[in-house]
Amino acid sequence: MSENLVTQGGLRLTPLTPVFAARAEGVDLRKPLTPAQQAAISAAMDRYAVLVFPGQPFVDDEQLAFGRQFGEIEETPTLVDQARRRLADNQVNDISNLGADGKILAADDRRRMFNLGNLLWHSDSSFKPTPAHWSMLNARVIPPEGGETEFADMRAAWDALPEKMKARIRDLVTEHSLIYSRAQLGFEAFSPEEVARCTPVPQRLVRRHPGSGRLSLYLSAHIGAIQGWPRPEAMALIRELTEFATQPRFVYSHGWSVGDLVVWDNRCTMHRGRPYEDKIWPRDMRRVTLKDCAPTLEQAA
Ligand code: OGA
Ligand code: MN
Image (spheres, rainbow, N blue to C red):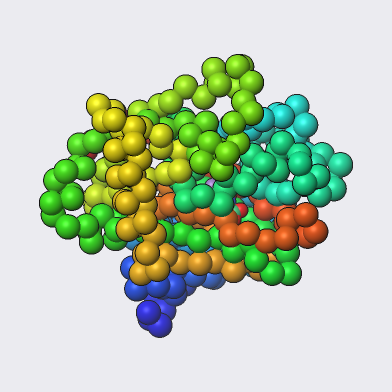
Protein backbone atom coordinates (compact mmCIF):
# COMPACT_ATOMS: atom_id res chain seq x y z
CA MET A 1 0.00 0.00 0.00
CA SER A 2 2.99 2.28 0.47
CA GLU A 3 4.29 1.56 -3.03
CA ASN A 4 4.68 4.70 -5.07
CA LEU A 5 4.37 4.26 -8.81
CA VAL A 6 5.58 6.76 -11.34
CA THR A 7 3.80 6.32 -14.66
CA GLN A 8 3.89 8.05 -18.03
CA GLY A 9 3.76 11.82 -18.12
CA GLY A 10 5.14 12.13 -14.58
CA LEU A 11 1.91 10.99 -12.88
CA ARG A 12 2.80 9.66 -9.41
CA LEU A 13 0.35 7.18 -7.87
CA THR A 14 0.08 6.15 -4.24
CA PRO A 15 -2.56 3.50 -3.52
CA LEU A 16 -4.98 4.50 -0.75
CA THR A 17 -6.48 1.09 0.12
CA PRO A 18 -5.52 -2.52 -0.67
CA VAL A 19 -8.29 -2.81 -3.30
CA PHE A 20 -8.78 0.53 -5.11
CA ALA A 21 -8.30 4.34 -5.02
CA ALA A 22 -4.99 6.15 -5.35
CA ARG A 23 -3.56 9.59 -4.74
CA ALA A 24 -2.33 11.09 -8.01
CA GLU A 25 0.30 13.83 -8.05
CA GLY A 26 2.80 15.45 -10.35
CA VAL A 27 0.45 16.84 -13.04
CA ASP A 28 -1.15 20.31 -13.13
CA LEU A 29 -4.65 19.53 -14.40
CA ARG A 30 -5.37 23.17 -15.22
CA LYS A 31 -2.98 23.01 -18.17
CA PRO A 32 -3.80 21.07 -21.35
CA LEU A 33 -2.64 17.48 -20.86
CA THR A 34 -0.02 15.84 -23.02
CA PRO A 35 -1.10 12.58 -24.71
CA ALA A 36 1.15 10.71 -22.25
CA GLN A 37 -0.49 12.38 -19.24
CA GLN A 38 -3.96 11.70 -20.62
CA ALA A 39 -3.11 8.04 -21.23
CA ALA A 40 -1.60 7.73 -17.74
CA ILE A 41 -4.73 9.16 -16.10
CA SER A 42 -7.04 6.89 -18.13
CA ALA A 43 -4.96 3.81 -17.29
CA ALA A 44 -4.85 4.75 -13.61
CA MET A 45 -8.63 5.29 -13.58
CA ASP A 46 -9.19 1.86 -15.14
CA ARG A 47 -6.99 0.32 -12.46
CA TYR A 48 -7.95 2.31 -9.33
CA ALA A 49 -11.46 3.70 -10.19
CA VAL A 50 -10.96 6.62 -7.77
CA LEU A 51 -8.11 9.13 -8.09
CA VAL A 52 -7.46 11.91 -5.61
CA PHE A 53 -5.58 14.86 -7.11
CA PRO A 54 -4.55 17.28 -4.34
CA GLY A 55 -3.86 20.95 -5.07
CA GLN A 56 -5.99 21.57 -8.18
CA PRO A 57 -7.76 24.86 -7.44
CA PHE A 58 -9.94 25.03 -10.54
CA VAL A 59 -12.32 27.72 -11.65
CA ASP A 60 -15.37 26.32 -13.49
CA ASP A 61 -13.99 26.82 -17.01
CA GLU A 62 -10.73 25.06 -16.13
CA GLN A 63 -12.62 22.16 -14.60
CA LEU A 64 -14.78 21.87 -17.73
CA ALA A 65 -11.70 22.02 -19.99
CA PHE A 66 -10.07 19.24 -17.96
CA GLY A 67 -13.19 17.08 -18.30
CA ARG A 68 -13.62 17.62 -22.02
CA GLN A 69 -10.27 15.98 -22.68
CA PHE A 70 -11.80 12.66 -21.58
CA GLY A 71 -15.23 12.66 -23.18
CA GLU A 72 -18.68 14.16 -23.54
CA ILE A 73 -19.92 16.18 -20.57
CA GLU A 74 -23.40 15.64 -19.13
CA GLU A 75 -25.90 18.45 -18.86
CA THR A 76 -27.03 18.75 -15.27
CA PRO A 77 -30.53 20.15 -15.01
CA THR A 78 -31.47 19.43 -11.41
CA LEU A 79 -34.86 17.93 -10.84
CA VAL A 80 -36.16 20.53 -8.42
CA ASP A 81 -36.11 24.29 -8.69
CA GLN A 82 -33.87 24.47 -11.71
CA ALA A 83 -34.84 28.11 -12.22
CA ARG A 84 -33.14 29.00 -8.91
CA ARG A 85 -29.71 27.69 -9.97
CA ARG A 86 -26.62 29.33 -8.48
CA LEU A 87 -24.13 28.46 -11.24
CA ALA A 88 -24.29 29.84 -14.75
CA ASP A 89 -23.00 26.84 -16.65
CA ASN A 90 -25.42 23.93 -17.08
CA GLN A 91 -22.51 21.49 -17.31
CA VAL A 92 -21.26 22.30 -13.82
CA ASN A 93 -23.20 20.49 -11.12
CA ASP A 94 -23.70 22.52 -7.96
CA ILE A 95 -22.85 20.23 -5.04
CA SER A 96 -23.26 22.82 -2.30
CA ASN A 97 -25.63 23.96 0.41
CA LEU A 98 -25.85 27.46 -1.10
CA GLY A 99 -28.56 29.37 -2.93
CA ALA A 100 -28.18 31.74 -5.88
CA ASP A 101 -27.49 34.58 -3.42
CA GLY A 102 -24.49 32.66 -2.04
CA LYS A 103 -26.23 32.16 1.32
CA ILE A 104 -26.77 28.86 3.09
CA LEU A 105 -30.12 27.29 2.14
CA ALA A 106 -32.87 27.55 4.75
CA ALA A 107 -33.45 24.43 6.82
CA ASP A 108 -36.75 23.71 5.09
CA ASP A 109 -35.67 24.63 1.55
CA ARG A 110 -36.82 22.04 -0.93
CA ARG A 111 -33.37 22.00 -2.59
CA ARG A 112 -31.77 21.16 0.75
CA MET A 113 -34.20 18.29 1.26
CA PHE A 114 -33.44 17.06 -2.22
CA ASN A 115 -29.65 17.35 -1.82
CA LEU A 116 -29.77 15.13 1.28
CA GLY A 117 -30.22 12.26 -1.18
CA ASN A 118 -26.45 12.44 -1.74
CA LEU A 119 -25.99 10.90 1.71
CA LEU A 120 -27.26 7.56 0.34
CA TRP A 121 -24.86 5.20 -1.46
CA HIS A 122 -25.34 5.80 -5.18
CA SER A 123 -23.83 5.93 -8.63
CA ASP A 124 -24.26 9.28 -10.39
CA SER A 125 -27.02 9.59 -12.99
CA SER A 126 -27.88 5.89 -12.85
CA PHE A 127 -31.47 7.18 -13.31
CA LYS A 128 -30.62 8.46 -16.80
CA PRO A 129 -30.99 6.09 -19.78
CA THR A 130 -27.30 6.64 -20.53
CA PRO A 131 -25.78 7.04 -17.08
CA ALA A 132 -22.56 8.70 -15.91
CA HIS A 133 -19.05 7.58 -16.78
CA TRP A 134 -16.59 9.60 -14.60
CA SER A 135 -17.47 12.27 -12.05
CA MET A 136 -14.93 14.97 -11.21
CA LEU A 137 -15.59 16.76 -7.94
CA ASN A 138 -13.55 19.80 -6.90
CA ALA A 139 -13.56 21.25 -3.38
CA ARG A 140 -13.87 25.05 -3.33
CA VAL A 141 -15.08 25.63 0.26
CA ILE A 142 -15.20 22.93 2.93
CA PRO A 143 -16.65 22.82 6.46
CA PRO A 144 -14.31 22.57 9.48
CA GLU A 145 -15.52 19.05 10.20
CA GLY A 146 -17.60 16.31 8.56
CA GLY A 147 -18.58 16.36 4.91
CA GLU A 148 -16.26 13.54 3.86
CA THR A 149 -17.12 11.56 0.74
CA GLU A 150 -16.96 7.76 0.86
CA PHE A 151 -16.36 5.50 -2.12
CA ALA A 152 -16.96 1.75 -2.44
CA ASP A 153 -15.36 -0.59 -4.97
CA MET A 154 -18.09 -2.54 -6.80
CA ARG A 155 -15.61 -4.76 -8.69
CA ALA A 156 -14.00 -5.96 -5.47
CA ALA A 157 -17.48 -6.46 -4.00
CA TRP A 158 -18.54 -8.56 -6.99
CA ASP A 159 -15.38 -10.66 -6.75
CA ALA A 160 -16.08 -11.37 -3.08
CA LEU A 161 -19.70 -12.52 -3.53
CA PRO A 162 -20.45 -16.22 -3.05
CA GLU A 163 -20.69 -18.06 -6.39
CA LYS A 164 -24.32 -18.94 -5.72
CA MET A 165 -25.24 -15.27 -5.33
CA LYS A 166 -23.29 -14.36 -8.46
CA ALA A 167 -25.28 -16.88 -10.49
CA ARG A 168 -28.56 -15.67 -9.00
CA ILE A 169 -28.06 -12.01 -9.86
CA ARG A 170 -25.85 -12.10 -12.96
CA ASP A 171 -28.62 -11.34 -15.49
CA LEU A 172 -31.00 -9.22 -13.44
CA VAL A 173 -32.26 -5.85 -14.70
CA THR A 174 -33.06 -3.10 -12.20
CA GLU A 175 -35.19 0.06 -12.53
CA HIS A 176 -33.70 3.40 -11.46
CA SER A 177 -35.40 6.73 -10.74
CA LEU A 178 -34.64 9.81 -8.64
CA ILE A 179 -38.10 9.34 -7.17
CA TYR A 180 -36.99 6.04 -5.62
CA SER A 181 -33.86 7.45 -3.94
CA ARG A 182 -35.69 10.48 -2.58
CA ALA A 183 -38.57 8.36 -1.34
CA GLN A 184 -36.08 6.46 0.85
CA LEU A 185 -35.62 9.67 2.84
CA GLY A 186 -39.34 10.46 2.85
CA PHE A 187 -39.07 13.16 0.18
CA GLU A 188 -42.24 12.62 -1.79
CA ALA A 189 -43.34 16.14 -2.69
CA PHE A 190 -42.91 15.76 -6.45
CA SER A 191 -45.14 17.68 -8.83
CA PRO A 192 -46.85 15.68 -11.60
CA GLU A 193 -44.45 17.33 -14.04
CA GLU A 194 -41.41 16.21 -12.01
CA VAL A 195 -42.80 12.69 -11.80
CA ALA A 196 -43.18 12.68 -15.58
CA ARG A 197 -39.49 13.56 -15.94
CA CYS A 198 -38.48 10.68 -13.66
CA THR A 199 -39.74 7.64 -15.54
CA PRO A 200 -37.74 4.65 -14.24
CA VAL A 201 -34.96 3.48 -16.56
CA PRO A 202 -33.67 -0.09 -16.81
CA GLN A 203 -30.03 -0.92 -16.03
CA ARG A 204 -28.07 -4.14 -15.64
CA LEU A 205 -27.37 -5.14 -12.03
CA VAL A 206 -24.03 -6.63 -13.10
CA ARG A 207 -21.95 -5.01 -15.80
CA ARG A 208 -18.53 -5.46 -17.29
CA HIS A 209 -16.07 -2.62 -16.82
CA PRO A 210 -14.51 -2.19 -20.26
CA GLY A 211 -11.14 -0.73 -19.24
CA SER A 212 -10.28 -3.53 -16.82
CA GLY A 213 -12.43 -6.35 -18.24
CA ARG A 214 -13.69 -7.00 -14.69
CA LEU A 215 -17.31 -7.58 -13.68
CA SER A 216 -18.89 -5.07 -11.35
CA LEU A 217 -22.06 -4.71 -9.33
CA TYR A 218 -24.09 -1.73 -10.52
CA LEU A 219 -25.92 -0.62 -7.41
CA SER A 220 -27.43 2.74 -6.53
CA ALA A 221 -29.94 4.31 -4.14
CA HIS A 222 -31.91 5.15 -7.28
CA ILE A 223 -32.92 1.48 -7.69
CA GLY A 224 -36.59 0.88 -6.88
CA ALA A 225 -37.35 -2.41 -8.60
CA ILE A 226 -35.96 -5.53 -10.28
CA GLN A 227 -37.73 -6.45 -13.48
CA GLY A 228 -39.98 -9.48 -13.01
CA TRP A 229 -39.66 -9.49 -9.20
CA PRO A 230 -42.15 -8.50 -6.49
CA ARG A 231 -40.92 -5.15 -5.17
CA PRO A 232 -40.36 -6.08 -1.49
CA GLU A 233 -38.31 -9.11 -2.52
CA ALA A 234 -36.35 -6.97 -4.96
CA MET A 235 -35.64 -4.23 -2.44
CA ALA A 236 -34.63 -6.74 0.24
CA LEU A 237 -32.04 -8.17 -2.17
CA ILE A 238 -30.82 -4.71 -3.21
CA ARG A 239 -30.41 -3.77 0.42
CA GLU A 240 -28.51 -6.98 1.19
CA LEU A 241 -26.17 -6.43 -1.77
CA THR A 242 -25.64 -2.77 -0.85
CA GLU A 243 -24.75 -3.69 2.73
CA PHE A 244 -22.36 -6.35 1.49
CA ALA A 245 -20.72 -4.07 -1.08
CA THR A 246 -20.17 -1.16 1.32
CA GLN A 247 -18.34 -3.04 4.07
CA PRO A 248 -15.25 -1.18 5.31
CA ARG A 249 -12.91 -3.49 3.36
CA PHE A 250 -14.34 -2.11 0.08
CA VAL A 251 -14.48 1.56 1.16
CA TYR A 252 -12.19 4.58 0.90
CA SER A 253 -13.25 7.65 2.89
CA HIS A 254 -12.00 10.98 1.57
CA GLY A 255 -11.53 13.87 3.97
CA TRP A 256 -11.44 16.96 1.77
CA SER A 257 -8.91 19.76 1.51
CA VAL A 258 -9.67 22.86 -0.54
CA GLY A 259 -8.42 22.35 -4.10
CA ASP A 260 -8.76 18.56 -4.11
CA LEU A 261 -10.13 17.08 -7.31
CA VAL A 262 -11.49 13.57 -6.91
CA VAL A 263 -12.34 11.64 -10.06
CA TRP A 264 -14.37 8.45 -9.78
CA ASP A 265 -15.69 5.90 -12.22
CA ASN A 266 -19.45 5.55 -11.72
CA ARG A 267 -19.50 2.33 -13.72
CA CYS A 268 -17.72 0.39 -10.97
CA THR A 269 -17.99 2.41 -7.74
CA MET A 270 -20.65 3.86 -5.47
CA HIS A 271 -20.21 6.90 -3.27
CA ARG A 272 -22.03 8.90 -0.61
CA GLY A 273 -21.58 12.20 1.16
CA ARG A 274 -21.22 12.20 4.95
CA PRO A 275 -23.14 14.61 7.15
CA TYR A 276 -21.83 17.98 8.33
CA GLU A 277 -23.44 21.00 9.96
CA ASP A 278 -24.94 22.21 6.72
CA LYS A 279 -27.18 24.81 8.39
CA ILE A 280 -24.07 26.55 9.78
CA TRP A 281 -21.07 25.94 7.48
CA PRO A 282 -20.89 26.54 3.74
CA ARG A 283 -19.64 23.63 1.65
CA ASP A 284 -19.07 24.43 -2.01
CA MET A 285 -18.15 21.57 -4.32
CA ARG A 286 -18.47 21.58 -8.10
CA ARG A 287 -18.91 18.47 -10.21
CA VAL A 288 -18.26 17.93 -13.90
CA THR A 289 -19.58 14.58 -15.12
CA LEU A 290 -18.83 12.55 -18.23
CA LYS A 291 -21.57 10.68 -20.00
CA ASP A 292 -21.23 6.93 -20.63
CA CYS A 293 -21.42 5.65 -24.21
CA ALA A 294 -24.82 3.88 -24.01
CA PRO A 295 -27.52 2.46 -21.69
CA THR A 296 -26.06 -0.50 -19.76
CA LEU A 297 -28.40 -2.93 -21.50
CA GLU A 298 -26.81 -1.98 -24.82
CA GLN A 299 -23.28 -2.53 -23.50
CA ALA A 300 -21.44 -5.85 -23.69
CA ALA A 301 -22.40 -8.09 -20.78
C1 OGA B 1 -21.67 13.97 -5.98
C2 OGA B 1 -21.95 13.50 -4.60
C3 OGA B 1 -21.26 13.69 -2.30
C4 OGA B 1 -20.58 14.72 -1.49
O1 OGA B 1 -20.98 15.00 -6.12
O2 OGA B 1 -22.10 13.31 -6.92
O3 OGA B 1 -22.69 12.58 -4.44
O4 OGA B 1 -19.88 14.35 -0.53
N1 OGA B 1 -21.30 14.13 -3.63
O5 OGA B 1 -20.72 15.91 -1.81
MN1 MN C 1 -23.18 11.66 -6.42
